[in-house]
Length: 550
Image (cartoon, rainbow, N blue to C red; front, top):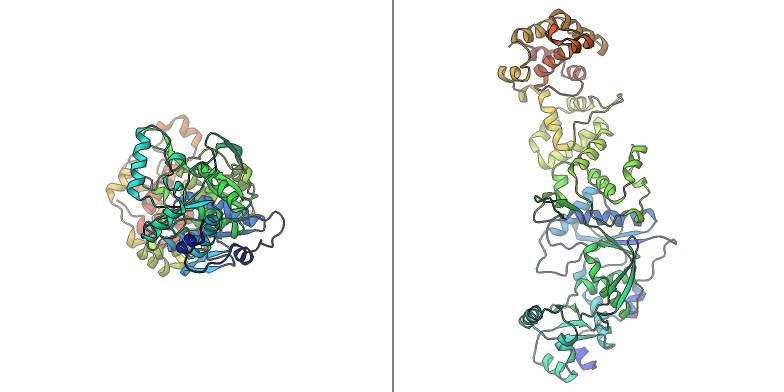
């Protein structure tokens, strides 16, 4: 292409490709170390699939002694959402997926291979667009949106494959004089890649997980530089991942169809391709029973921020996603209950090729296990931090009653074989704790009778009266339970469960019914953590106040 054309397209000095290769040298890393990146677009809420991909990137890099980068693909400025960058950084921080290079809080950057915002790399892209123009591997296209729409309609009516290729690539045929004339007339343009592929021929590409795959060659003359001078994803991917020395690209399987194009771009630029891992998308069952991709528009769980907002511990989502990524994670966690998840030997080879279903039941189970492994102090601190963001009123209650709250949270936690599993997320702590506070505990006679409807009001009152006379806050648990049994015997209930099961009509009830009466009066519910421990924490005065006749 004439130098005159190139000078009109790029009138200002640009770095040369050779200078850029020197500025961004091959990284000095140990053999086998992987350099990975996650490259989200700041165009709205953060999809949980992006967190999934970032986790895989982070594990591959850090397990191998490599580098994990965050790069922001902010070239689609029409769709960019204000505050979206901060949201991305906040989600990764909440999940503790921490990048070695790229933006951090405050839109600062760390690392020597930046800028990490694509919009700030314009000159770098222009240097390589210029190179392709000089080598006749790209050309200027002056077709406007109306012309492209007419082409699309015409191809649809003719029932032929859509796109800008072959006989449909109108501007590919322009002479240099025609290009100059259009430029001097001030016509807007984009730059297209000049594909040398043939759709009828095949290309074989190799994926780390999926193995060798055969595709039709790319013959589309895709846009590589838009009218605003910024690159498309396809071109930026090739340039950035080469200069940043990415060794492994992890991306969703929706990008499989673009792989032949990317192979062409790397070849045209004279570069080796990185390794690719195309991950299966996370799915769900819709109302009609069909599997589909988790949708930003339809599914609240697609929003990665929703998990911290709802109070899940930061590692709960991570361990759940690891469970989706490597099916042996669950067995490893069972064998290593107290090890950090980073000790798990993550393997790209174990990534599945079919989409896993998002399962809240499994997520909740993992979350309960994580909270169950924490001390009362840790649960208190994490809950307080969450409440200060999302429940200011209960945060005040927690801070004003810190010691009491820690005692509450320590029930069935330390010194027991079977840890309580009634807390799934930090938002549950309030629900499981409020009955400990007199100013938050209200219970009517009707509510008590409804929960104890198998018993008469006289028997209920007798149980309360007798227990109040026997109860001693200083009793150890065995002595406390002996008194519960004494109450049962005094009011005509049995402690012999075998006899009760054989002939329940012979008794008013059993010792379990007595404990249930006490539980309902004290907690307002028929199920709770260990009743003896609850009463010890509440203290004699509060217990006596609640155990009154109805």
